[in-house]
Image (cartoon, rainbow, N blue to C red; front, side, top):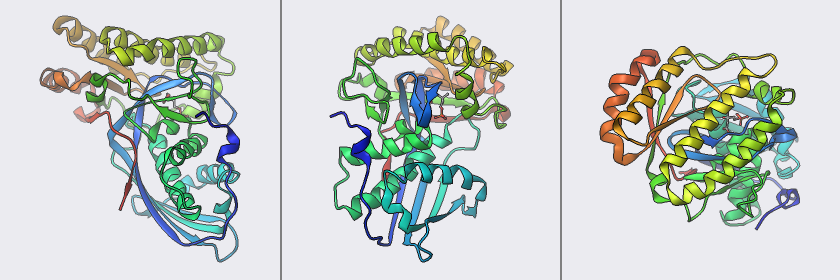
Amino acid sequence: MKMNENFFISKAIDPLPYESKWEAPSNIALIKYWGKKKLQIPKNPSLSFTLDKSVTRTSIRFEPSKSGKFNFKFFFNDSLKPDFDDKLHVFFDRIKKYVCWIINYELTIKSINTFPHSSGIASSASAMAALSLAIMDLESYLFNFEKNDFFFTKASFLARIGSGSASRSIKGPVTIWGDNRKISNSSDLYAIEFGKDLNSIFKSYQDIILLVDKESKNVSSTKGHDLMHSNPYAEKRFLQARRNCDSLIPIMKSGDLDAFIKIVELEALSLHAMMMTSNPYYILMKPNTLSIIEKLWDFRKGKNIPACFTMDAGANVHILYPSEYEKQMIPFIDQELSSFCKNKEYIVDQVGAGARKLD
Ligand code: PMV
């Protein structure tokens, strides 16, 4: 069933102490979300692989507030991290309407990531997803309901308010966020699972993340989305993404890998084309990003292996392929691609099943 915004507004209730810990994965988009209306309502649907090993683990201790005011402390890797307070305040202010019971609490939030910062893996996606799940855990305890579809859908809804792509980090192995005429229960408000029709080849996909650059990017995603408002090609891009999404959906069912590659690589390059045609223009790719793409294209032609690339908003390259090609791919990556990475570093990940509660 498709849910509207009113489904997600909870009642106020007396606070009870509680503790909850969740692990949520990052994700890599195949159809890119780039351009939004307010509060992360996307201009086009997006579709992603959920990752497996690249996760955020977040615990929240909820204490009834002694001062009568909502408050939180945020620890990252065991140290108090006030740098994230502004972003978190904005998040809590925005979600209060939907979890109004939260205003009676003081929260101690502790988070770690299993992957390095600025590695081309979206940490805001896994972080906002884990945080939202821990909040929903307390809501389900207070209002005594199961961790059912509503639980995960509302977690995705809250995560979206924190960071759009985070809505896709609750479930796996493939999720879709954004109204789409091919999938009747899809929504701009939250992400849904691709569903049972997913071809099994995609459940075995590997994602090797080549760390070309580990510096923080000089134009943030927030700024990048914003620049789409004045990009002269924006409307065409939203149309292209909608069409690519329409075309990819049957491919995700049939497992046609040649067609899959054509759409995934087109999406990655179209995302970066939007950066280059924004005003002010900018480039996040590095020379080594292009060297990797050329090497991969040569290798694919020579060996007839269905490996392809995608990119996030950064210089790093995600190499995607079915696990049956592992034996050929790992030596190729080690011997021919890792020299384009900072300190020859890359991360080996694969598609995953989605978030889970930790003890
Ligand atoms: O969720 P945000 O605001 O970090 O934007 C994500 C944008 C991309 O990662 C480039 C694409 C996507 O769909 O994940």
